[in-house]
Length: 149
Image (tube, rainbow, N blue to C red):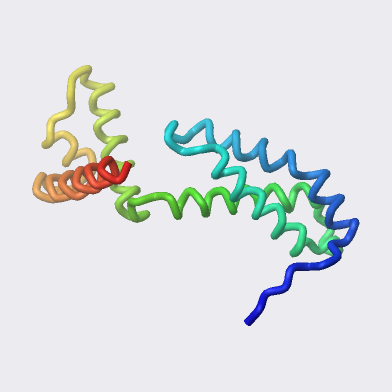
């Protein structure tokens, strides 16, 4: 199967692209602020540009929505999809890691000292054995990620 590029893009399509390409950079930099420094904003801009092009192709003016509103949602979605594809951790493991960070942080703020295993287990309402299992899974994945870098 051969995929053919559109030989004559419409002036309307070109105008939408030209008028809205700035949204890609704005959204990419907004997202990048909350990311680790090893994430390249240019990767986010590339993904966002693809989202913009898809939004141009799929936009239906009959829906009563402004194009830039629709495009912004699609651009952000494309960027988030790219970030998910870059993530080496499964979503459930990422959730567990975030819960651990929150538990340790809360306990350390309240007590003014490093959290103990028993305190974290109680905070998360799990056994210390379950906590040790989660800690070993998360730390093993963290080591794998550092080796990839």
